[in-house]
Length: 117
Image (cartoon, rainbow, N blue to C red):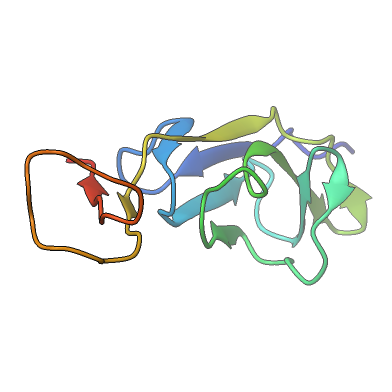
């Protein structure tokens, strides 16, 4: 017997494009039931991640990529799920050194804080 190809969904209303620095929880499900899980990023097994959920702690250029999962039920592995791509976009916050009081013209060394809403 074969195991149904699993699917991946993201918690809440997350899409593939996530504000940089934000954590995302991915959930792997299969209509064949629960079993042993294996998570991969870009085809490479993510060591130690064997649960039905995987938390990508911070989306940045290193964590961005295509995620898949495999479910093994009664020693029969499924095929990899369809990939779930995650990409960092925008900025959550950037802070640089403070060297002067607020003013209209920015100079080297001034602080700039950008917050995405």
